[in-house]
Image (cartoon, rainbow, N blue to C red; front, side, top):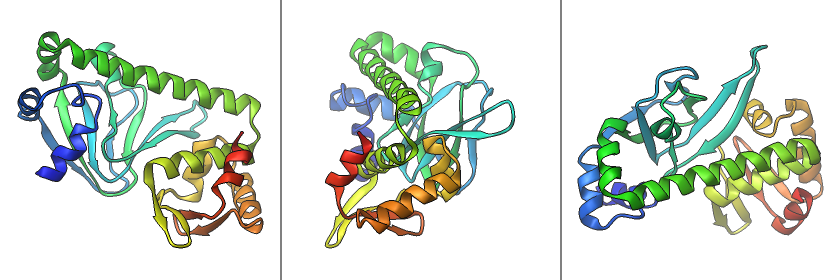
Length: 227
């Protein structure tokens, strides 16, 4: 329970609250367990709750008219999603699928709305989270226009490293748990082009490729390539 509370305290929904307020909100939480590859909700579904990831990873995706899938983002412990429908109660704009086995804390909008009315600082933190998501989306759109595929791959790996990386004796281990196809969807390119970029980085000694992971060996070079 202490570990769960530590993870929840990092979520924008809880970081503005004192212990009493956080405890009151936790009483409304329902735990959701997902197996790898299981869909939590699909694009177009009615949205009536938001989620905080307690463990594991979840991807948010959208499907194009021609059936191609676009991976919007990968989220991990302490990160929140599904909050958009709290302020704009329309159908879900993305699908949420477990990348790994995952445990989530679900909070219904009907429970949250009266709580937000009495705790306006919670609404402020939620809006800040939405603003950060919008800025991130704007950055991704700009990268698709102005940055080549190797640059986008480098930037995506650095972003994943910031959230999931663990220092090792031989470099920064990034267990992103994504397939090659999913990594390609994340950067908006073909799998072949992304694999070519990864192979080039490995040849230059900037990283080592492992199964659903990379080890970053020269982060400064990767940062330069991501610019």
